[in-house]
Amino acid sequence: MYLDSEKKQEIFGKYGTSNTDTGSAESQVALFSYRIAHLTEHMKANRKDHTTERALVALVGKRRALLNYLKHKDIERYRAIVKALGLRK
Image (cartoon, rainbow, N blue to C red; front, top):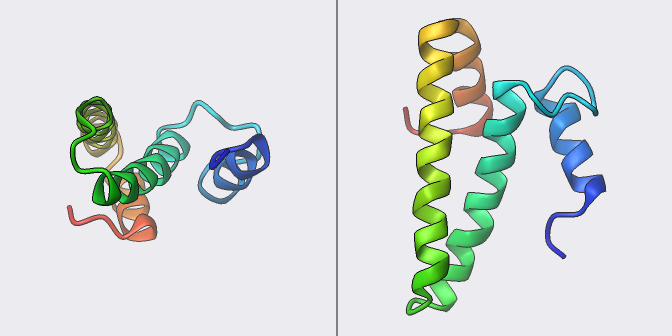
């Protein structure tokens, strides 16, 4: 499996406040970004997989909503996570 509990804890530890910080916006955005990268690679190899494409679009929308929330709530945290993940906005 591409995303096991050790990988999740690593992501949460790096972008959240601790390994068990699963609720902060930064850790959720980082987890969504990891999943988006994985699904993007899958879509490159399987371009007719419409179910995965739909899930990918939904995941991108969830990440965008979280980033918008973070931008309105605390602009410094937003800028930090965008820079750390290398996102375009």
